Amino acid sequence: MKTLKIIFSCCLISSTAFSFAQDGKDLFAINCKYCHSIGNGTVVGPDLKNVEKKYSEADLIRWIKSSQTVIKSGDKTGNGLFEQFNEIIMPNQALSDAKIKSVIAYIKTQSENPVVTANAVSQQAPTATPKQSALTVILSTFKYYLIAIAIFFLTIIWVLVRVINKLSKALSEEYEKKTVATKIS
Image 1 (cartoon, helix red, strand yellow):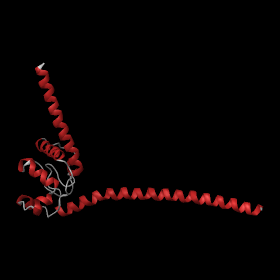
Image 2 (tube, helix red, strand yellow):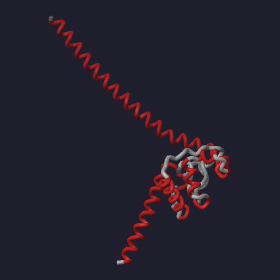
Image 3 (tube, rainbow, N blue to C red):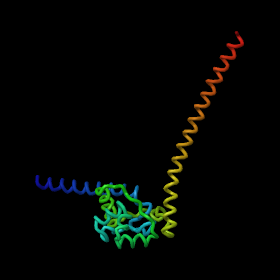
Image 4 (tube, rainbow, N blue to C red):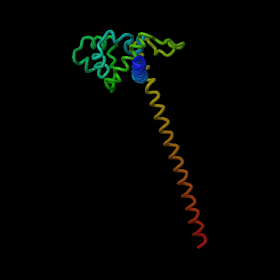
């Protein structure tokens, strides 16, 4: 019975760790992958492979939440990174400490066990210079917002055209009724 409890506990812990890393994977994909890679070199910001070995968890959390706060505090490492990457501002991340820790856990697992895909090179953002890459990331992100806005406005125009057509039809029918009634009397 004791062995069964130990096995169950190990399974629970490993599944929780996997779930934590999976949450981190999703958060990384949403918030980080456009500017950072894990083991594929510099994109807009630094490669994050083994970042948890270079900096404390507390420092990473502070940086991720607000890099500019860290820079303005006079932190030499933060200012060095900021200058190294052409003073491109990392956006503040409105994530809880737990979510940031899950991203760090994901980065750690990917640093230790990188998953290589057949098209890994094609998925990587251009790495010419950080300024060019930043522009590429900004344009590719806003492209989707612009498409969504265009679809929204086209839908509104379509609805308005239908309303105008129905009102025109109703008005012309009403006008015909009044015209016929006037001719009869």
